[in-house]
Image (cartoon, one colour):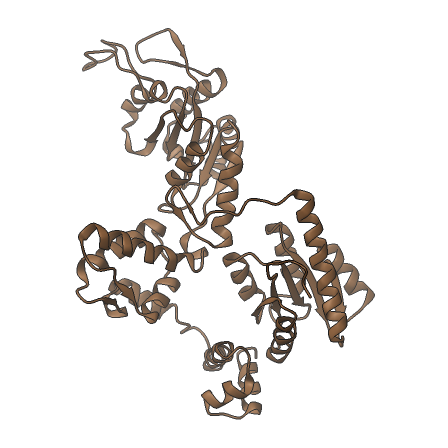
Amino acid sequence: MPSSPEKERLLVVDDDAGTLEVLQRNLRAQGYQVFTAPGVAEAIDVLGQMQIDLVITDLKMPRVSGLDLVRHVRENIKDTEVMMITGYATIEGAVRAVKTGAEEYLSKPFTDEELFAAVGRALEKLRVRRSGQGEAAPLPTHLHGLIGESEAIREVFRAIEKAAGTSATVMITGESGTGKELVARAIHYNSPRAAAAFVPVNCGGIPEGLLESELFGHVKGAFTGASETRAGFFQTADGGTIFLDEIGDTTLSMQTKLLRVLQNKEVTMVGSSRTRKVDVRILAATNKDLIALVKKGQFREDLFFRLNVISVTIPALRERGDDILLLAHHFAKKFAREYGKPNPQFSDHALQVLKHYDWPGNVRELENVIQRLVVMTDGPFIEVPDLPSLMRYSALKGAGFDRSLAEVEAEYVRNVLASVDGNKTRAAEILGIDRKTLREKLKGGEE
């Protein structure tokens, strides 16, 4: 039995539905929370949505093997153990599994006692490692406007906590609409500089000829229209933080000036020869591939390394699983309150469309969609027909029309099976088929 007061979360990965059912039932009886996945792709999706303590994976699976899953966990997830099970046990296979990163290796057939013992050993190693690191404070689900519970966004929260405790420069990357300025604000307001100014600057939104003056200020008469001396954003942010958004849009000339500020901690106002010391922390952001721009000679390599001391990458919304639903409800409540309307409810089908839409505009697009729905929907429920037509079409387009009928049927059968916690008899009753036919249909999508 697990010794921890919290139920450990286990993810069992096997392409055989019968094996998944047995392992899930037996491990649940031992008090664990057990999730299942029929393949590596589905397992990676689960790992992206929640913290898993132990992954138990089969070695031989169609398309992608268990070793690839072990490698993925070891390269991308710190706080998860991995255990390999296989019906093709060899010394070489065991060595490969352990070298790749599996903590335990169990060959079929195995007894329940052998399974429980191996699981216990793997989880004990995890507990020892965690106790050696000290108990980490629970991560928030809301952080200065950032909302989410998926493992992908929790990684961002962890990075924010670490970055906030230093004075190092930070490079924030991610697609448009993912919330780069929110991350920058969270870093600033959780840092020792929180009482000072946070100054956001959209480098791509200021004409090239004005950017230098806006950043560093100008003296009276420096150029036509400069009727008075005015401080720039760096002087305004003195003692605090300046956030340079869309840094990839700056010219090489401006990059040289920014590099000088980073190196010397001083600025020169336009029209002046005198330098002024500034104490400013710089956070920068971009949705461009700066490394590619460096290779093309369009971004200074030395500036890139100066800015990229700490890197925070924000995941796209489509990679955040149920966070989409969490955000949809949050925005619906926010706009309902703002417009004095009752808080709308989403139908299950509408939520599924929202979750499986690609969201090219990310959180910003989701917020705009929900705002429009709150304004335009009259009834208490938001249904699929209320959603934008492009979204409904996209949902149909992504519904699997490039798959065979057998694959689609097998997926539906697996979903029914999952809805009854793996009870094949009950699933067969719902589908109107016998257990033998059920097994055949489950295999249909793998041929």
